[in-house]
Image 1: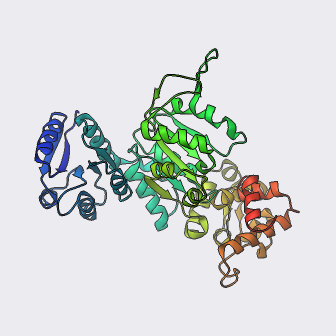
Image 2 (image 1 turned 90 degrees about the vertical axis):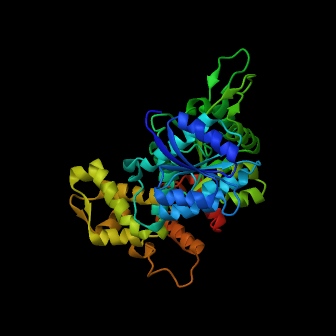
Image 3 (image 1 turned 90 degrees about the horizontal axis):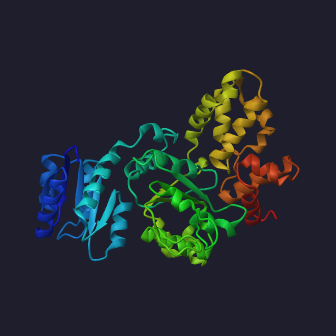
Length: 435
């Protein structure tokens, strides 16, 4: 390593602590070692390190509590957790609490040094990439903070949120914020029309007598595999994927040799995966392995204050809007902010695209916006027009009914306007008693 890395190391095992300290020092680390939490806090008080390496199990204050105490004073401090005794669940708890990574003892000194270097770099997440996630709401600030802290880790990430809330964008930003941004970013869409072909697409083929084909796992090696709509994976494929996530190896279909890969797995779902596990449709072991770093995207209706920023940014980047000088007045932005947007950000952007295509040159006010979208004022769901005590499902049902009435029952057209696929809309309609 060409640059010295300042490391605070706490472990109550004296022999292990001395041995690893010497090994890390030879690898370019300036290690300040402590035999327990109290001594570590004294060293921390004397000078904050670039990264902390903490044993999970120590007498008195354990590594998780020590991490929280230090992070209360330095919120961006990256922490790597050491764990023994096969205590993987506790290590995953530490990751969810904000640790960058965890390593199981006994561990190779080179692996520890690499993890520390990556953790230190995680403080420098690509600010330009993070700015693609617009909004100043607390929920979006939390999303950006989680990405900044975990971008360089190899730990799996689970992104949860309603359809159209921006899960794919979050996965891309997570990748481009990392030091692996020049490595492959590969997407497996589990909602495709041919689920029976997903296994060959993922694992590739090495059947005797046929030309070998590389699958998405091979293509993603060294980078990120984004598994969109992971809840739709079949039971057999879930089991096969679990082995890859756990072991980093697989066999192509029909093949006999193992392929070894290093991949950052990022999965996304708009379904309640705990409920899917309870119903027997999703393996709890796979959920446990994927749900290490969790990012929850709020629906647009819960961050209405961000709508104006999203709309303004989209207009500023839209070539047609710039060419014709189309802009939104304050009352138009207020109208957008009052809408229900059951299709979330995707629906909002589709509505803006349609407005720009149909609008005249110049400013687009609320009246013109309603006209270009073909909506009557009562079709917009605002905080003033929602009946007192109405449930979210009832509001969503009322909005879909209004759109179906306006479009003459054309499900394809309504699904396009909502920014969701036809099957998703049909499932919503069935759930809401509209079919």
